[in-house]
Image 1 (spheres, helix red, strand yellow):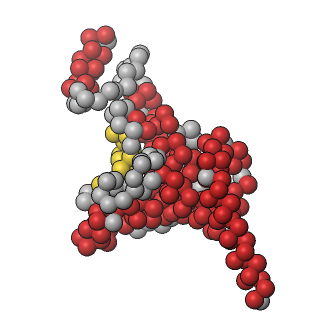
Image 2 (cartoon, rainbow, N blue to C red):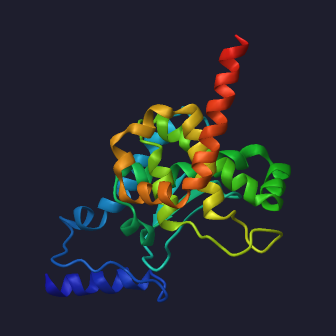
Image 3 (cartoon, rainbow, N blue to C red):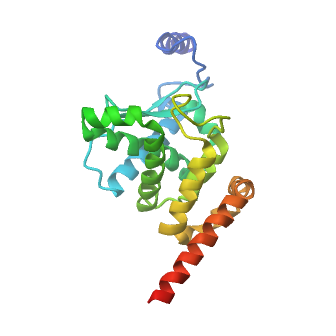
Length: 234
């Protein structure tokens, strides 16, 4: 049995890139192979396909997990229409809702890419706008599938960059602050019931509220004034 396990280990290592760091499981055999190695993949697939099914997405979107732990990322391949979740991002996600936020964003990109070559060109040229569009569409997907959209803000607070400049081709993604504010405004207008949910006490969400306090208060004041004016007109 030990000889068999050594051979199995060599075969598994032979299929991986030497640049990647792989999980090392102990007491591995063919009877418990899936239980030991498949839990993360199963979680990603279950959440991904729940989002696809609940949103009645009539597009084929293959969802896979790359076991590299050195890559803290997730992406959508717009040509092959696949969504890839890298194992390296999983330690930064603390709930199914947070994983759903990541998967929903990438599904939104993939569904958008079904628009054909012209749409793909537009997505590449105007990538920053399409990132925010995928953030917001991903929130719709999350809510429809039964997940809390505040998790999208929590993930963004943990992981999204805040570069010094946000112009030209210096980056393909907008500043994290711009993205989280767009998410907050969207949830505030469309899904306000979640703003007082249990997740609003999450430390990362509270950090977002503190860091963006001025912008949030300015936005909310304008919304309240606008709603008051509507009521007056009626």
